[in-house]
Length: 399
Image (tube, rainbow, N blue to C red):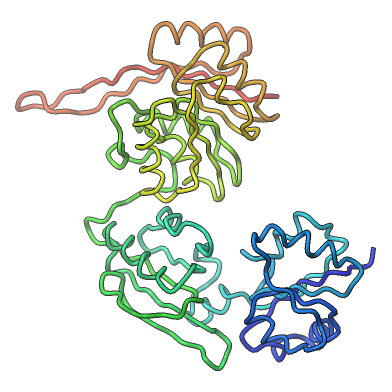
């Protein structure tokens, strides 16, 4: 099939920045889709100018209506890097599309900063919760962030300062590659610049001696979570997540999520990982939502209800953690819903739940272990071991 749809990356220099072949495609277009600034940059007065539809998901329908015409979609920079090209490509066959890449905002920003692209993190908060960048705040990390508006750098400066990274160096770059390019430099704790709405933010994270250290690997301190004492403790949580195996874009069901500690760490550990926490108690759902927001995974979804009824209608999971509400009915419903190669982990602290796990282990196999943890604590003027309640853990992979 001959491609009828062209997705063209364009920069601040407009048509002058395109190759001659790509420029000819834009100039010959019958329909040009993009924002107001894209239409100005395209300088094609003969084409039908179509603005981004609202809601944005209506875009695919608008494109399909124009199948057979010469259609060009204009996107800033690289259309396949945090941009509209990927969204279109999920709905229209690649055989019908020709992509015309351009230098991305990330590449331009890295060049302006003199940073190696291989040694930094790229992320976007454009049209997404700004809080998701919190998960990337770590000592000496370099971040390039596509922002969502003129107020976003100030919000990010506040996040950095609150976590002991107030000395972090921040640079806002706007209109890169155009005649109106601007640059604003400062440090997080003193940030007070008024910047253009459309910008890219570069952050060199610098930690104070008392900065909060929040690793991307499982096992954050219990103290960073809001909880009521009923939670999967740090050492057991690390072992649990190791068996759940977080992977890019994978979905976790956290059954009996409580304060959400397992779901939060699942989402922090792998890029674009998703999680649904099922919890019947409103106070614990509130804690889970607060933890998700504060620890950089605001997309955590929370469901009110008891298992197995509350599981109906949820997306098929890649992994399931049963930390509460364990029963044979719960296991049966979870096991049926789990995708092939999905991982299931169930933890038990009572004799009744432990007995059930032993029975399931005999029927289905997997690994059955008991985890015992002791922490050093004062004993008068001396120090002794304070044992935590042992946890029986059953895990298996669906083959």
